[in-house]
Length: 174
Image (cartoon, rainbow, N blue to C red; front, top):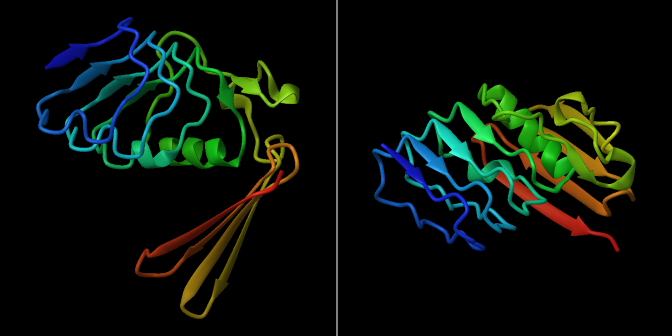
């Protein structure tokens, strides 16, 4: 089943709004005015394989909104003013690990920060985004620290233990 809500001037996607649509395999939300994709926006869409959110006003892509979409194969994100920082780096890494294609007809690119404007997401490196990934393994746990420098003003610390319990501390520096 496919649902096309493109070009409907949608500005907000509420959490769980698509709950109960388990048979939906394609969802098109392109060319609306969506600025934020909440963590639970697509929760319950277990069979979605194509999600098109291109041509909106989305600046931040967080991996949490696709984590519960096990069959997702294509996520169209091009033509959004994406901010390329460590949050996006984490999203790109997660999407790659799940073999999700992030385009429909055009390679997505950065809009900000200024030194990355126009750079294709597929060509980005952690260093270019000001991200540094450090992994330290100790007796019974692993500490992963991702740090973003002054370019985005954000420092993210994540702690993972073997039970996959994650404590995330987000510090915003202005």
